[in-house]
View (cartoon, helix red, strand yellow):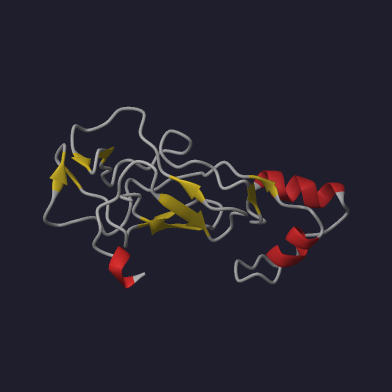
Amino acid sequence: MADLEDKYIVFGAKTRCSMGLRESQLVLNADHGIFIRGKAQLHVKDKESITNVIPFGGCKSPSNPDTAKMMALRGLTQGPLSFAGTFCMPALASGCAGACTPMITAVEWEDGSEFTDIDDEKALLGRCTLACAYGGVIEITDAGQE
């Protein structure tokens, strides 16, 4: 992934969340007027759930109310929360993954370009990450430039 670190990110870039069940992608509802290989480039403020960050299928985080509800319906107790997988793996194995709706509370993606601006915002790079309030870390796995 070292070659991805400094790549600019465009519409359709692939992403994953540490609490999600599948890979997803980034989208824009309106471009910023900057394109790479015919695809709209993103900046660090393009971080809104559903508008920019498409859900990851299901969510295995016990902090997600939908996952907690699924577990309660199956009679499972939460116990101590562990994002390292201690609690999440039994939840997933028992079919308790809840619906994924990324709950983005950050102001922007972390670690954007210090040298390139798009609409007065830092350009989004492959090394950038975004935190979900349910404990997931969203990262970019493909710049989308192909």
